[in-house]
Image: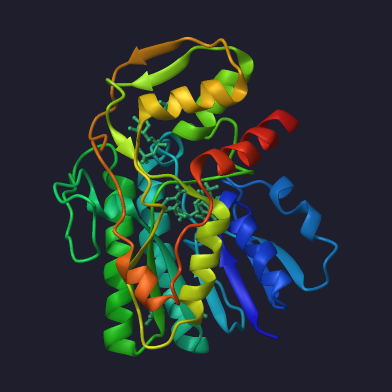
Length: 309
Ligand code: NAD
Ligand code: UDP
Ligand code: UDP
């Protein structure tokens, strides 16, 4: 039985990951400071003797004996990561140092949840891992983007300097049950607005694109990446289907039978115009991994979840 630490384990993605790791027969320590995560996301796991919940902030040292670490601690939605931007950078950078120090001491394998945001507002489309990105270092999104970029640097340097066994994944927009209704990201906003009959808020002209990955597909990719040999990444994990925000709004309006109106509000600064992963590397290195869940299928589950709240 492996002893696995998941930081940010009470969050949206982290809770699905803890579930999967337990199902695969591991011991799981879920560490979270509950900034955006919630006990509700993991309460159904608390009866499991192989699951342990720890309240801890990843920016402080943490000592435990583990075989694997998944480092997910970090707010992911713009409204949350911009609430206290200094703390966001600290979480990514100091959090990475602490978890890498822990991995170094225990010789654990460690996976970093990086992001497509490292590509910034990309001029190369679709994005492949060799692209260095187009990130504003001093804007409102920088605390997140540059924090995650620096964490990737730390991972690579601990690997080169200290032989730490690292894995880096770059996650593209992911959605599914257990996203917070007030998360602020586009999928949860549009579904909540449609269900409540409120106006659907499209930022800008709605022609910007994103690629939406259902959470189950991501979790499969994460577990395969952790199990891979002789491959550090970074590797893109995302669904290459690309949609404009207008298309997304129309799909959600139709699926919820909603009478909500679409309204257009100002575009936040530095909002990337396009995003779509090239997943050739993931397919090659992760035994043919590719997303299986189409947007409409994933939205059925996600709408069901928001209706149940
Ligand atoms: P989330 O906000 O639901 O989860 C983040 C978790 O980290 C929360 O439970 C939060 O309480 C916890 N956390 C935050 N700061 C912490 C700290 N200092 N110490 C301990 N715990 C802390 O978001 P999510 O969508 O589940 O994202 C999980 C990870 O995946 C994040 O690292 C995020 O950057 C990355 N990611 C997510 C997406 C996406 O589309 N969801 C895309 C790219 C990358
Ligand atoms: N660290 C931790 N848990 C451990 C080992 C280390 O939290 O089990 C932290 C510790 O606070 C340290 C950081 O990880 O500051 C980086 O560790 P490293 O060994 O690289 O550096 P150093 O101890 O020399 O600062
Ligand atoms: N967006 C929108 N309406 C909303 C929330 C977001 O039009 O209510 C847009 C946002 O401007 C961005 C896209 O949807 O262009 C995705 O935003 P999200 O915050 O979900 O993810 P990110 O920008 O980090 O990819």
